[in-house]
Length: 134
Image (cartoon, rainbow, N blue to C red):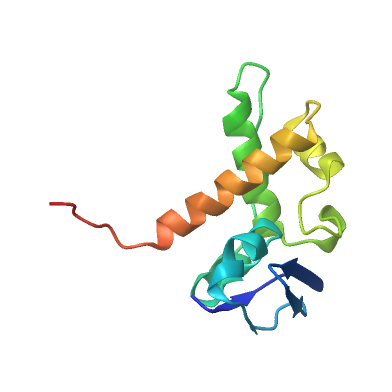
């Protein structure tokens, strides 16, 4: 995975590299910078279908007794699919206010960051072929 794409204009600085993304434009990223770019919302070009929607996203239904981590993950998936610049900060992460408006409870920056990274890992795992270790 060398080509990546981001849903907003952003510059990723990592390990002496400065990688300038334009919204929706494929950009080559050195392999050693992939995790840093993904931290700010970049996805591999072969995963860019995740950035496009065939239908409008469904807002997750969060009730009081629901698992907090599950609600946060659902919110991250919703925000990723909604793909609205209004919901993301300059760092490429969802704004805490946007997350809070979806889940209905206070969210810390650390919780938001952890849920965002978990969502990215879920997307990558869904795209990876299953392997059989012998």
